[in-house]
Length: 142
Image (cartoon, rainbow, N blue to C red; front, top):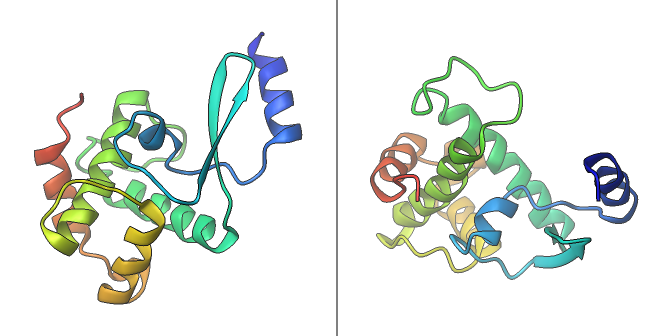
């Protein structure tokens, strides 16, 4: 299947794309709200909870903003190369998990984000400097 046909089928049939799809597909993280779908020979991940999806999109955007320096960028306005996206997603989620319980295993992204919100307040109040620092330690571009 060519890329154009794939994109057309994807946009017509899949809604609620998971912002942490790469980390879930690579088994770096898991999520109770994630659903996997196959389109041709590709696998995509969607979210079955609109509120969790909105929180995860906001978190992904804040991680992108806070990872700019660590990724050697001045700002991020488009898609990142795969390795940098993985570092931001996997490292960011592992860093957030570590900030809660000193563990690097992300068993449920939706629960992690909800627990972090409960502990730190709003998404903007998360300890991003600690998250990025921990991400640089635990995620070395596997």
